[in-house]
Length: 295
Image (cartoon, rainbow, N blue to C red; front, side):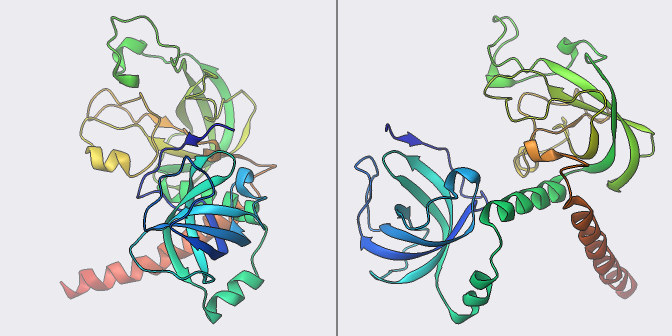
């Protein structure tokens, strides 16, 4: 199997959490992996959280690129918080953090839920936290964008508009969502418009493709506006290639991640996530009030 290097970002949150035992130092399970002092081979003893494609690695040996210079010993058991790195005859992971197994970890490991379910749950929680607006409702219409697409600045792959249409053309559409309730953010209107890519190209394949009649929870994100800094835009996953026309223009919402839409019949965790956010907001409010009073 040919090796395939995945892009990694140091700020990325771990998607594969497991308890493992260090089997070899300065070693790898594949020839394609560059080996240095931080490269080890570890056996996967127990998986705590994993996406579906990594959920069956229990009992296998994997390559792990450690996060720091802290020395580890052969035979040492550790908790690894990692992301996938290189695929081949085996798999190589980048550890974002690792720590020796302690008695405190045993309770967590004993009570660990299904790793894939745990992963999906955390992804939903993360998308909720990152969303600018969360509503529940129903898609009542799907249409072409009301303003000409030429009026919306697109920087997809930095291609000049004079060039032929890219194979990665998103084919923007707008879903009109009738709002039943607002769970996060401020929205007074009865409807909200969500722009989404109708294209099934690999760049847009995982983005939700809305259809009239769909009902559920929508975790919406504002497109990057002219007044938004690049650092702010990078702090959350935005729909690439879509930027608001200018500061002060009507909000343009997107739902770029597959987890940004949770149908009512599949999003059973959403009420608990919403309730948890409400409780957290109630805890924060008194602290802010006390700070204001002190001033």
